[in-house]
Length: 360
Image (cartoon, rainbow, N blue to C red; front, side, top):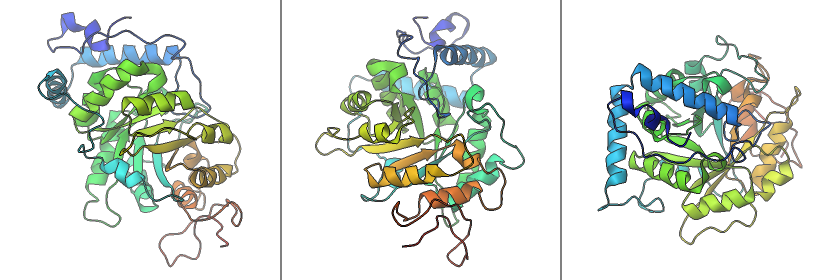
């Protein structure tokens, strides 16, 4: 295919499609990952997403999505006011929330219904509305929803459910957190869908899209007020994304901790710009919680944020090793020298137990 999904069906649909653009090479799309994130995908997953998008368009795009799409298209075409993705005046509330002082870490908790192993997560134990509140209560700074149904078992309906639960928390303490659409985004129509469904940010895979499409998607997102996270798996791609104007980069598909650290060491950041670094933490294939130590190591060695997914569900509905307990352990001020990564539960300052076996 040498055209976008929308372009493929323009003869039978009335809305104007995105401009045609070449598809990335199979080599660019063939990266694999030990985590369940969508950022490093194979050709088959991409082909499946193309088919899903064709069906979505054939079934009829929702008016709210089309409205966002038209706004985006108009902004991208306005030569009198070109979109500058490096413009410091563009509001970045998510990035501001995620980026704190050196030596601290923030966390993005990912909601999903399917593990990397293919096992389904219990709907009753991990209802999206209930988990949305638990993630917020226990310290997640943002929530991602893996809306690619084949990989994560979720749909846009789950995204909207979590967005609505966060909206209802506006008068609560802690208040609502941002929601990120973690879909396999290969077309600007999906960016419009993200905005229409209430997401405040979207994820773009640099290796899949290449430089030109990454810039196009960054501009499309900014046109709709969305923040962007660019996923990379090498230091070279991280630097390339930064040079293009990416404000947040996520290192994913890197199982080795030292390689993950090396991917952000020595990056050149343009003067006056802040670039937020996110480490995607793959779950280990055991029932331990070494991932907590990995989070602390990433914190101590320069990462601003961690993105966690499968590890949140390893303990099932256990009263101790529940997702909130794991989040609180990861974001505690414990150190690798003085604390063990044991997970303990607790709610509020008066709790007898709390996450992380903190000895300092």
